[in-house]
Every structure is written in structure tokens, then in C-alpha cells.
Image (tube, rainbow, N blue to C red; front, side, top):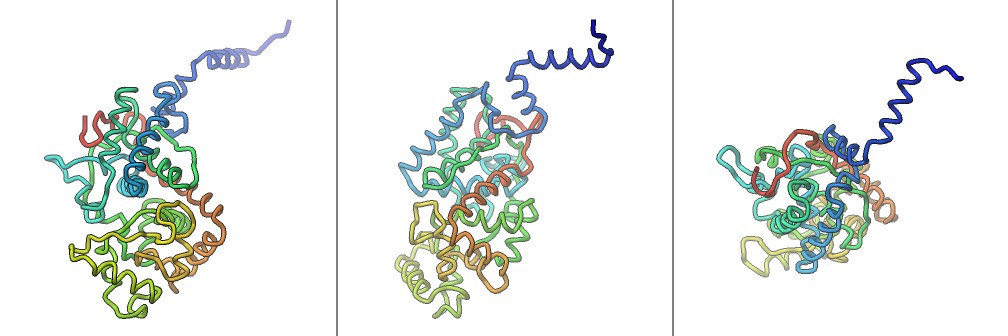
Length: 336
């Protein structure tokens, strides 16, 4: 008879015990010990991604611009204390919500879409799926529905108990930012220069109000608006002067393929047809490194897709609340 040392017997018993524990235990363990994972809701809400996709699909069918709006909503959330759904909170007696911050006021859209999806999930899986995870999944689905790539969304986030208007004003890049400012703001939240250029490609869908690039329109030639193509400048001046409505007229961020998630955005930059100053800055003389990335993405759409997916997962993993931090909100607009 083979004699096993006591420690070996103890280890063998432990392995046998672990093998008998249901997968649900490990799923819950990952949710309570600070990990994000693709199958976080596999046992507790297996239909979560299908429910979110159906909600996003309907919203985009009703309003194609909503795809870009939901992608932007996730971006603006993650840049303020991480991806914690703080951007969805309304004002309270103790704090001002981020919705009224300068980069968000009268600009962010899609709150009612998230509300509708949350309602469906509360019916299917009460008190289970966080608003922060809904934002992350909806952003991915918006890209897919626009013809872009898909990726596995890591889940298990919890929702914040407060919002930070001041930090939203400080952290979210402005549409007139130069390369140095863009790089700094991305690095401040844990994203690289490469992430910044790849994620800027999200501007291949969506629209922007004339007020966000009005300073570029005051010149009489492209020399007054560095890097901007002369004919493109003239077309923008005409568009934004046609209606006197406080610069609320909308222009396509990518006028060539405005509703398709592709690499045309980068081709536009190289042609001097970037709508926002922060877009065109990526190929300016002081942005040689960023220009090299723009050229790569313009030439190789697959390289853009791969880097965009990687950067979206990285951004979605910024400072998530997990374990017992935060809460799972019943209503994304207010705390429980």
C-alpha cells in the first residue's frame, strides 16, 4: 500500500472539494473579489447581452445617430472616476450630476435608451445587472450595429454612489484640444497615446454641433484654420451659416460614410477634413507620433479595428467598482 505524506493527502482532499463546487460559486467569487470577466452573469442572468442588444438595435433603428451617442456615453462615463455609471445620475441634494458639466450639457444623449434596457433587465433578473455594465455592452453593440468589430465585454462592475461634475469638466477632452492636451488627459486616466488615437476613431460615426467647432469657421481660408482643407472649410461655413439657431446645426463627424463604423475618419484627417480641431490635431506638425498611427489606420482598417477593440476593453476596465463597493442600482438615474 502506497503511503502518502499528510500534506499530500490534505492537498488531494482540497482538490476533490474544489471540483465539487458549482461554477456559480466561482462566478460569484469573481464578482465579489474585484475581477471583471466576460461570463460574470452566466448563471445569474444569462440573457443579459441579448436583452441589451435588442434594446440598442431598436434604438438605432429608430434613430441611427443613437449608435454614436451610446458609444460616447460610455466614454464620458469612464473618464470620470472610472466606468461606474456616474454619468447617468441626476442631481441630488448632496452633489451636482455630471449631465450638466460643460462637455455633457445639451450634448450627451441616450439616457432613455439605457433606462428602457435597465427596466427590461430588472424584470428578467432583478437587482443583478449594473448600469455600468449596461453602458459597456451598449457601446460594443452600437459599434457592431454600425458595421464595426465586436469584442468580449468584461463585466462585473457595480454602480457608483455619487457623481462628480467638476471632474467631468476637468477630465473629458474638449473638441478644440491640441495633441499635448489630448495625450495628457488620456494618460491621466490610464490610457496611452495609442489608445487615444484608436479611440478617437469612434468619431467615424456621429455628429457634432457647429458650436463645437465654431472657432475654426471664422477665418477666410484654411491658413486661419490650420490643417483644414479649403473647400471643406467653405462647406462647413455654409452649413453653419444657413440657420441662425445658436450654432445648434449638426455636421457629420465623417461626411463620407457617416453611419458606418470604418477607418474613413483617418483618411479624412490626412485630407484635411477632420471636423473638430481635436481630430485634425492628430496629424499636425506637433503630433508626428500620432500622425504615424493615423496613417497606419488609414491604410489598414483591420489594424484600426484590432487596436480599437483592445483600447475599448482597456478603457472599460478603468477603476471599476467591484465586490462590495458601490451598488447595483434599481434605477440608473438615482441611488437605491
